[in-house]
Length: 257
Image 1 (tube, rainbow, N blue to C red):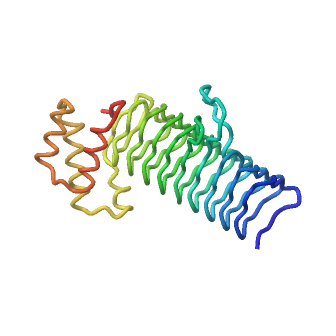
Image 2: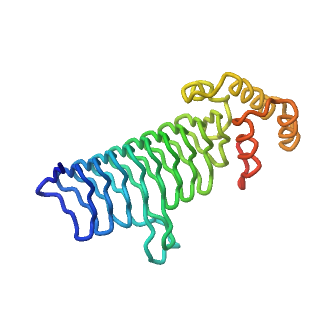
């Protein structure tokens, strides 16, 4: 059974699933959809063309679906889509896309900690953790199971690869390859994310192959094309290694090296 505080505002047109909980002074806008079992705590706001999945939790003073801060916005109905079981802590902001019909996307089983910001048209995968105060600029892509520690900044149009790890205060000015550990205001790759890969069940063979690929990319001081060629010829082509190679070759802004 749903529980809606008498001070909560649910505007005409909003769609609430079963067993939804709305705390005091929540606001659900007229185009918002809230999935079954989701909870909005006191003062949370979901507005715009926003769809929130099942069993999510939105903490006090978070705002999901607010208008983009992109000056190119010319109206229309962009929005936000959030998957299932994602937690948005206090004062999180997730802005809508910029162009008509464009969606900012956050996957399932994510944790966005207090004061983190997801700007227009970002694409956040599943199982992502974004810690306190981290700011993602517009059109950033964060792939599955990446972890971004506190007070990081990711520049617009950059990608953070699958299972990558960004240490606190990192400024990501280029793409962060999957499975790598990045750190620093003058961002550098410090190693590969062995522990994260173990936790996600990546095989020992693949972890060893990624370690070998990391050493070629970051220790041998080869030009990038030569490093990629050596990885293809000398490293077992596990799915993770192939994914790493594809990510690097598809990078439009260049990777951190």
